[in-house]
Length: 101
Image (cartoon, rainbow, N blue to C red; front, side):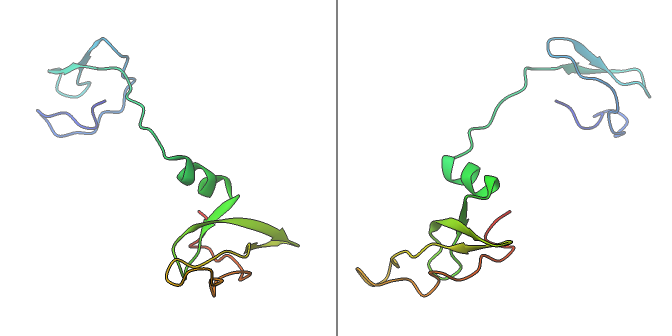
């Protein structure tokens, strides 16, 4: 997909069909063939964060499940990464706007 014309530097504001030659509507020059749309693999953790079921703990930076308490969400109790078998200080705290996108 092309964002601008390499000849006149104007943005492309027309439909780009895969497999077809793209011609600039302003200068009339050929830009190139439009390739197929490439899909980017998104890690499962990032999908869960976007869905709002998981958030990043601000203390230990782990992906932690969120529980709904009324209108807000809080981190479930979880173990920290620095000390073995010790609860993270972020356990049970409310998830702020940075934890869930």
